[in-house]
Amino acid sequence: MSTLRSTLNSLLALQDIDKDLYRLQRQLAALDPGTVLQQAEEAARIDLDSATKAHQKACADLKDAEMQLATLEKKLSTYNERMKKGSVTNSRELANMERELAQLGRQRSTLDDKALTLMEQTETLKTEMAIAKMRAEEALQKHSAAQAAVSSERERLDQLVQSANVKRTEALGAIDDAALLKKYDQLRSRPAFSGVAVVKAKDGHCEGCHNQISQNAEREAYSSETLTICENCGRILA
Image: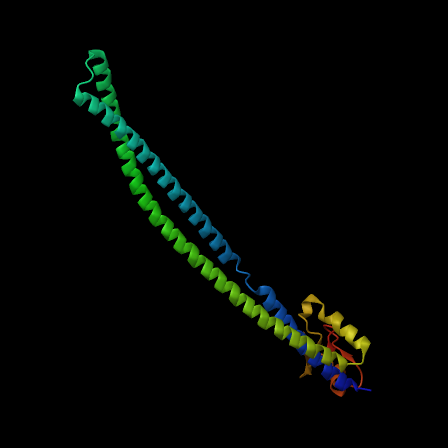
């Protein structure tokens, strides 16, 4: 049968382990899941997708403008060839052809300007797309690195928790007072106690609440002949 002093010492050892477990669990809970970096990565991918689509559209528009120019040039070439050959003799037909040539010339000028603008635009968008791709790759690398670091830290903390749980099981085996264990758990669960249920009596004060205790309570705590409770906070005095 264990003495009260040895039981209280075992209870203090259990409390130290429980403190470590609480600290480890808080560290696990506080691990950054990388939400900010994930959001940055997603935003960078969206920007890359937008830049890529804009570049593809500009390229498609340029190709369309070039095809229209090719068709226009073919018409102009046909009309000019007919004009050179002098195959058109009817004055009305000739006037119509001249008007058509003038209109086609204006259309070519407009298309030339459009094609030139689109060429410049595609080059600008190509550069923007390259920058967006670089940023997306950097964001992915940062997020992946952070995830790896968090995973490694979580694994380390999990191992410490497992080790602490093994120690806790061993510490529990050294305590054969079920009622005292129940009281210990009840006291530890009080939010104001911050997980501290067992404290020392020192210099006439409780080390838990730091209030003065009676000389009788201090003597009983030192003697460990009877279970002593702090008359101020209700913690177990050891």
